[in-house]
Each structure stands twice: as structure tokens, then as C-alpha cells.
Length: 397
Image 1 (spheres, one colour):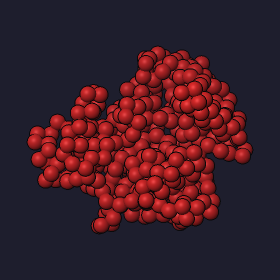
Image 2 (image 1 turned 120 degrees about the vertical axis):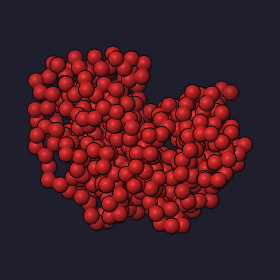
Image 3 (image 1 turned 135 degrees about the vertical axis):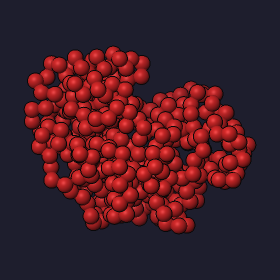
Image 4 (image 1 turned 60 degrees about the horizontal axis):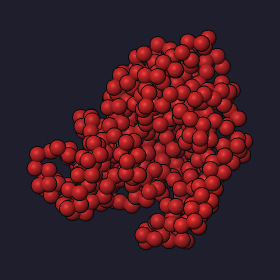
């Protein structure tokens, strides 16, 4: 393979999964992060090179210069893979400049951000005939009255830009049950300088969440796709996937492909849907425009999305492929799933018997890989260190 792959973000298992997806095919992989502490992806045997560069937020211009200087030294343009939302935003802000030195699937500046941003995503989806939950902006005139009339309680206060909200509040959203809670949540967001929206909560347990994962070629046509069903999230009810099963739902292709092709999207995207427990209707919740938590599961079902993108961008596209059957495979992030189960059981949403029964299915692990064990061992050492520090601190107090 002549072109290197450059991975932005190796301190989380998404970046690690991309490193592995490309490395197993002999592609030279360069992993880049802003530090080495906790960056367990650097320890993968599939990394040909690891580099520490400027921080995407503290010095975005420095990171852009760092990447371009790196690419200039390569004989062939590298393929660039962002593995966290802040890296996607960084790339979008520097897209045309970076495209002079790297191979990147997206060609339209601003489309990454427009699709990620909930304030612009939902009007865009509605414009293309895709159902979205009723949503009101925080600066909407007569907001409280409109929430009463159009949305009702309980409802959700969700960030327009997820990453800074999660960094500030350590949760993906606020669930509010009455007007007083809504006012307090809006005030907290305003004080933090964060834009939020108020959204109707679609009825249904976590197993009503589904995903449509797809690759769109340079003609903005879906060529590869898989559908999945979530079962558990962390934090529970409104968090990230920790236990998700591949499930063939052809209706999601009909909805998801229509939307992504309609906006001329290129590259990988994952649409999260929720199925209304009362009507059975699927609502678009959000779109991830970079490789997601489920990547190890998607690989095990037979579609290697990072490799598909690499092959197309380097001039050797794969034949179209889709998973049109149920494989019974599940994605499992053990560490956070155990935390989630504790909370599900405490909340009376799951029983111990239900939890234990779920573990008999064949699994795709978030971090562990027998063929590449060192990142998992480094991660475990990090977790044990955190536990011991807590115990030691508690003992001193």
C-alpha cells in the first residue's frame, strides 16, 4: 500500500478500531494525538508511527500546519481519518487546505458541521422529508408556552454541539419534567455559553434505538451499509452504545440512504434513529460523520468501513456490499456496560436475569483483541490505577 493512513485521535477505542481495520490489510498507519497519557491506541501493533501534535482546540492552526508539514514529506498523499467530533470540526474548518495534501472523502466545506450540529441537522432532515422529533430553539419567542403546546413533559434539553456540552456537564442532555426544571436547565446552558434546543422525547426503551451505518462514494451514493439495534447505553437511556446488536432493518436503509444521498454526503456516516413505541415510526435523532463506537461490530459483520474509504480514495474501490441478514453479533464495551447494568437494575429497567442472558451472544469487543492485546492491557492498567487512587484517597480522608 503506497498511501499512508493518518488517524487523528488514539486515546479512545474508536481510533484504535480504525488503526486495526487498516493495519490488518498491511496499510502503514500513523496515529496522531495531542498527548501520550491514556493514549492506548498508540500501543497497537498495527501502528507504523505515532506522533504527538498540537491540540485541536488550543492550537488548531498549529495542528493544521503540523499535518501539512507531515504530508509534504510523504511520497503519496495520506488518507486522513478523524476519530472524534472535535477532529471532524477541525477538519471541516480547514477542509480545502487539508485536501491539498490529504485524501479526504468529503468535498463540501461545512457539510460535516451542518450534519453534526443539531440546530442545522433537524431542519435539513425535515427539508428532505425525514421525520425528526419536534424541536424548539432556546431563543424561541414564547418558548415555555410552545413547549406546553407542541412538546409536553418530560422533554429533553439537548446541545447543538455535543462535545463542549458533555465536557461541561458530563452528560449528553438534560431530561426535564416540568417548567421549573426546564428554566433551570436553560439557565445552566446559557451561563456556560452553550446553545441548546428543547426536543420532544420519543417514547420507547433503549432497545428502540437503531443505527444505519453507511459509506457513500464520491458520487454520493450508498455503496456499503449495515443496520443495528441498541440494547444498552451509558449513561443509561441517553448515552453511548455499550451493548448493541446487528439487526437487519431494511426500512432504515430506505430512510437513511434517501437522506444522505439527498444532502450529497460522501464518506462514512451513522444515523441514529428511535422507533416510536406507540406508532412504530422511525425518527432521526442524530448523525455521526466519523467512525463510531460500533466499528468493531461492523467489521465482524463483514464490512470494514475504514478500509472501504481507503480503497476508494486511493483509486481501487470495492464492490458494493450490505449485511441483509441477522448475524446475532453484538458490540460490547464491558467496562461501561457493567456501570450501565448497575444503573438499569437500580432503576428497575432491567433484571439481573435479563442481563446475564444477554452475554451468551457472540461479541465484537470495544478494546480487547487477542491478536493485538497490548492496548487492552494498557487500558486495564489505567482503570486499575484510577480505582487504586480512589481507594487511597478515600483512605486518607
